[in-house]
Image (cartoon, rainbow, N blue to C red; front, side):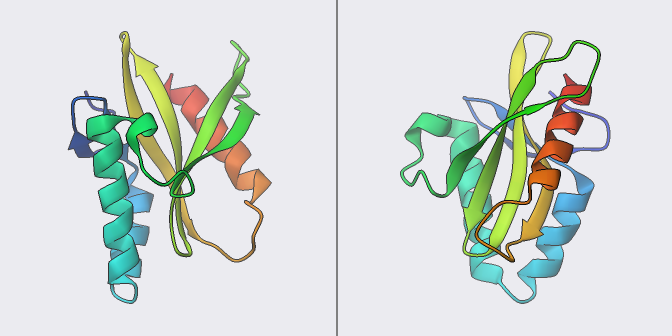
Length: 132
């Protein structure tokens, strides 16, 4: 399963993982200075693809950030998740298309403070809503 403009990262038995080009660019840039943590993000996404969120060992590395409004006509809220490794963060959520789920990585950031940027989480939720 694919989405236009997104790159396939993993297609395990639980769900495919798709990554926005901006997330790929961010991780490639960070890989020059923080190779170990970029690799950890990749490992977490791969495990998510194969086993699903319930089988990830560390709940701090894959965390539910909350439900946020999609802002579209159908309304409703969507769950936003974060994949974390040290200061690196990748935000995304599950998208259902044609009866199948996929995890879509929408944005990435380097943590600057303890609390997640609420505007970023709302932006990610809006994009997830557009992709549904």
